Image (cartoon, rainbow, N blue to C red):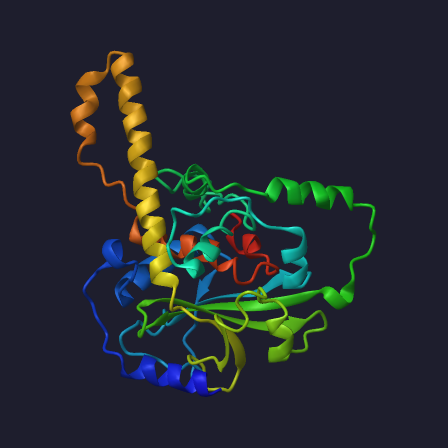
Length: 310
């Protein structure tokens, strides 16, 4: 708990910045956090902002009804070590990061989440730019999800789930002032609704990250004492910066291919109109990518459930 206390003090003492450095550092401001949270809730309504309540410890640099994001009762039907034994992405990440931790996170992206459905409540496409999953695939990150589906189909003869394995999690995303990125907190429950102990919640953290990434701490945005496991955000900005650079490269390559096709088709006069296009990821899409790489830390929690289109 010493680490948790130090983290709380750091959050309290770090001054707030409102200058956007999203594209250069991977960090976001409180205003950009709200913008990204609004987009996440719009695209995937299972995610919601907090409700105004006397139980919430408000931070004055965020709106009272947008202190943190939450989704409740996310399924978790096996332990993280089981995922490590049977899963793993076949990915070349040598160009992603020199630091091993960022590479470890990045090579897991795509192996544990379904393709994001970019359909809003009205049934219309809400993403005017390329689908994020397609971009990640174009970064040469292979998706093992089809193999996982096949394994599930092959095991369909099993009529009853192991109830002892069934767990559920409430997931919270708050803004970290000390690292200027989102921070994930998880609170777990058994199938009967009884709360998990911190030791049990650690069973659903990837073994590689239990000691260096996960921390037991009280939810800082509630006045009541609720124990959680938080995912330390020290690497988030680096990972996001690398992904932003990769997205930019992929989009530039796609745009170049489209221009070459236009020239072949005799549409070369339109080429100059493409020069001012922004190839970067939009800041409001930040949390979607954030959730995709959080799966490397909590592989058995079914994050794809939280990102199904409505």
